[in-house]
Image (cartoon, rainbow, N blue to C red):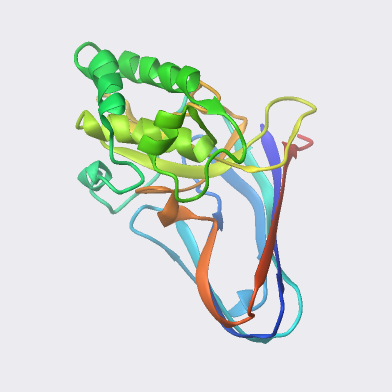
Length: 268
């Protein structure tokens, strides 16, 4: 299936920006079940941006520009061919050792209630079956509610409150998997829900290292493993490490940011 994606981040400032440096995770990964057919990034300074593949296998752009006096946008757009591999990610090289995805962060530290999920689902029995049970529990116990959390909400906080968004669902599953001694990583990308549908936001899920299978995606927000309706962009330790755009600036005073995402099934 071919999916068309347009991801625009628009900025307005109260005064001119003297200098800005931004790290972009906006280029889809290529692996066995995903291939980028066309892709471009439009942004001030993109023609001079440093582009490289990081230790997690992500395509990264380092963008800098000076003396911007008006509104500006960073736009990523293109078509990606995706096939359904039941969430299994094969053929994606990564220099980082698997053990790095056992690292606990503030966002992914498991609380006692999350550890109880580990005991229920991952204490014994087949790991893959336990992970599906874990995903189902998180989906049922944490209601999807936009605005209930923010970028700094931890897995423990969202699970205790019983509300969150895809970032929170992914962090909770990662916290539980790592609590069971299983490497897990945070994934950013896009999702369209079906034929004739269009998505208006970026998405996030988790990937877990399953014995004999390798890395497998789990999306607790939708209680399913990624299919050909998903576009995978980047992966890291937690959400803070693979934000689509992250950086700093001098000047600009108050910043106002608006994000618009369009994902839809493209003509084959």
